[in-house]
Length: 158
Image (spheres, rainbow, N blue to C red):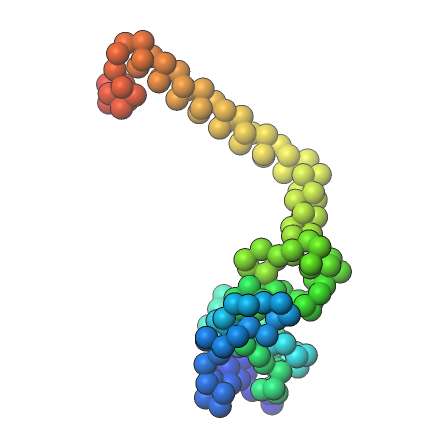
């Protein structure tokens, strides 16, 4: 039976110490590491015991781990490698956000959502409600200026 995610990470910290403060091993990264990241092949997949059904991957070989900053650790946790995301977007071209999400994947997800008629209807309704709220606020502010009262005074009076 293989050792679990928590046990491997506890053993990693016990044998190799903390990765915090070491240089990040990602190519071209000059930041300091925030922890150990799986840079080798995952040998196990499963649920992390202290999370809400989050599927994680880990390796039983401690040599598969290296110090990484949060951004690069998240990037590897989401799949793919240093150059390509799991969907094949070139990371250097598209870039990643602070949580390691590929911007190309994010763009595709937004396009799929915009093409969904139900999503468009919800967004349109939300935008109309926001515009109505802004018009009402502007109307209250205009009334306050006309009567010489501040918007705060106007709200207290109503």
